[in-house]
Length: 336
Image 1: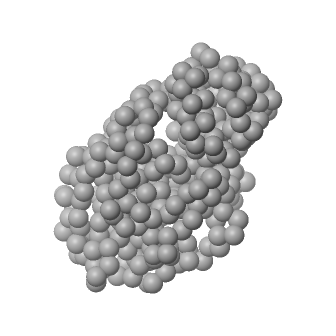
Image 2: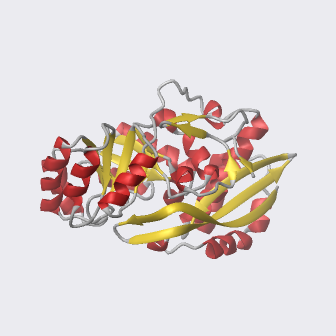
């Protein structure tokens, strides 16, 4: 098996702002694994909050290149277990490699990934479209630029309720709110009351990730469901979220790829938690991998490629919130 690494700097259509940062470009690593005439593709984007850069990820993989390239017929689960001890300090790197291996494995089996997993796609959820923090006028403009059935609205400002009230004047779409750890307990409970009146479906990670007592208090009193994001990074975090959140948002780059992501979703379902997968402004490479988990999800946020000024691959396509699979096997990705 051959390992090929590519570095990209993905330009965004608009400056993307959340409660803790603003970006115009998203650095990204694309991993290609080649074997027997087939190629599989994976992706992980950089993220300062998690202290991960593309050069660090590339260096991580170069260190274990002989181990990777010696792999041939292992299952994705076996491959992940073998590689994990070497990359456990950087799950982003492990994610890119795991996605590529899952893609390659399914292509060699002659199946789409969801078919290999025996998933059926009849009841797949629609994806939301994210509106980053900006002036109210700019947020309205972004929403009008792309009419959509579900919007994920980034908040964490002093004008949060005013923003949602104004956005509501311009659409009947479902709203989801992501405060990215920007609120406190009383603020979350009070905001939930007002936001429910404005057609908000749930709140994502309103408070700081490690404040479990605060999460439990909000869980008891919020009139809206609360979904964990920064509080649910790896597999061990799922059980912690029980009785603290109503659902979890799995990010493949944070947990180490599709292989552990599937396990997190399965555990969440057993605990009665709602399931969601989110993205980290990936190109269609990473977004196409997410699509194969859709049959197991209640919600999905896989709009990353839609936020780009120019994509670097083809794969799944998205129209009006509905996800359409590629005709190709694996995750269906082709680099442009």
